[in-house]
Image (cartoon, rainbow, N blue to C red; front, side):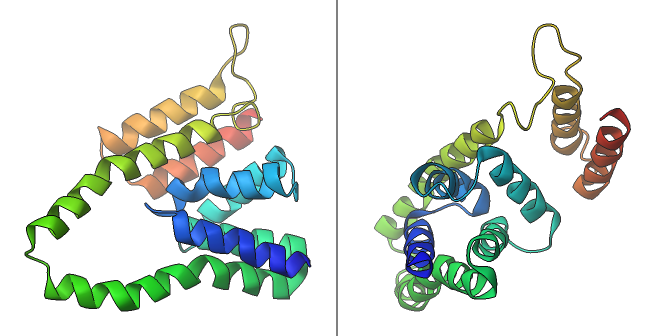
Length: 179
């Protein structure tokens, strides 16, 4: 039964999750934490962090890790296959259509109108990860080191154009030293 639930949960995420792994995080959290209760929000936050540190797409990494946690090796295969299957099937059918109609006004308009929706999904994922587990020291009478690390990293990537890998390593070192 758990394998069917894993497959169904990640198949839904794969079907309705547009915009990449970060846009899917809120959907994955709903299924894993709220709907099925397979893990707590703290465990989910740890899985997200682990998925971000490993090479590859975040959504596939987190599906693999959660699948393994819930159902072992077979669970990881099922969850990974389920989240990838809709994209693979869609890729086969849609690519033929898009290549034939790439200059069509309706196709161009539809694709460009999806950009704000995807940006909104990523923003919701960022808000979802701003929880007491991720920012343990946030508050009026706290030192707010994790918030400062987050803000400095954001500024470093978007305005100073610092390599994100270097910022991840630096943030990890600061976090290790402080906490």
